[in-house]
Length: 408
Image (cartoon, rainbow, N blue to C red; front, side, top):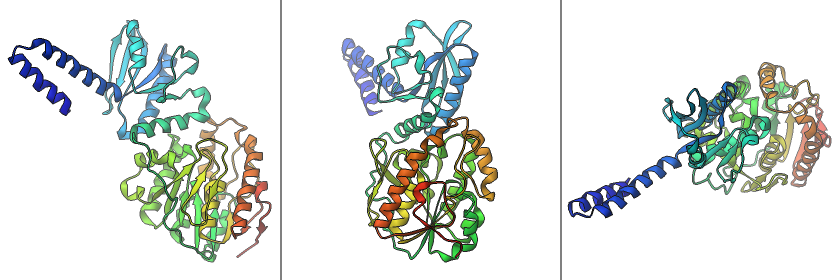
C-alpha cells in the first residue's frame, strides 16, 4: 500500500510540474502493481465447465475449496458456458457470487493469471506448463484429491511454510505402563481395566468415547489420515470431540506437519497450543525412525497411525506397552475394520462415505505392506527395551510376536 500511495504522490507532483509523460508511466506501473496484487490472491479452477453436469462438478470443487480454506480463502473463480458464450463466476471471500462475460481470446490470460490454479479435469488440460502451485483435484483420482486440497490450504494459510519441528513432543516423561488404543472390539475391555495403566494413547474415532476419556483422560491423541480434515459429514463429530478433549483435559494432539494448516483452520489458539507436528520423510516409502529422547521422529508421509505414530510415541514414554482394539477380522470388500460396539454406528456411516473415495480393495492391497512395516516397528520397540503385549489377537501379522493377555 505504501508503494501505491507513493506512486499517487509522484503522479500529482509530476502533473503540477508539467511532466505528464513521467506521470503516465508511474500511473501505468501503479495499475500493474494493483493488478498483480489482485492476481496473487485468486484461485482459478480450470478447465472451463461446459454444460450443466460439468458446472455441477466445478461447483462442488468450489464448495470444497471453501471448506478447506475457511475464512482464509481468497477469491475463487471459474469459467462456465452461458447463453451468450462464456462467463467468469466469482466467489469472493465474503461468499458473494457474481458472473461476468468473457471472450474466448481472454481465456489464455484467465488460465495463466492466478497464483493458485486448481485442475479439476486433467484429461482436458492441454499445453499447460506445470507449476508448483497447480493442484490436481480430478475426481477420477479421488484417493489423492484430499492431499491436493490440503496442499493448497497449506500454501494459502501458511505461505511461509509450516513450523519447523525440532522435537515431536514436549519433554517426554517416562511412565511405568502405557496402553495403546484402537477402536476394535477389545477396546471394550479397557474402560474397566484403565486403572491398570499410568497413561494411554488413542487414535482417530477413540475421541468419540466420552465415557472413556472422562474416566481416564488420554496422554495423547494421534491422527495422520488426511480424511480426518475432509468434508465427510461423519468426521465433523470427530473433530469437535478432539477439540473438546484438548480443551478439557491435559491431553496433547500429535499429527503430521502436512496437516498443520488444517489444525489452524479448524481449531482456536487454546487448542492449537497443545498440538505437536511430526516431520515426514520427503519421499513416500521411507521407514519410521525415532529415538528414545523424544526429540526426533520421522515418519512416512502417508503412513499408518499405529505403526508410524502410536507405537513410536508409546515406546518413548514407557517400556511396558499393551495394545487394545487392534483385533478382529481384517477389512474386506464388504466393509472396513471391525469396531467395538460403541463405535459401530459411527463407523457404519463413515464406511459408507469412505467407500465413495477409496477403491474397494484399497485396504486389502495394503495388507502385506502393513504386516511387514508393523513387524519392523514392533521389533524396533523391543530392541529399545519395550515389553509389548496385546489384549486379543490381531489380523495384522506384524503383531503376531506379542503375548496375548486375558485380563488385568
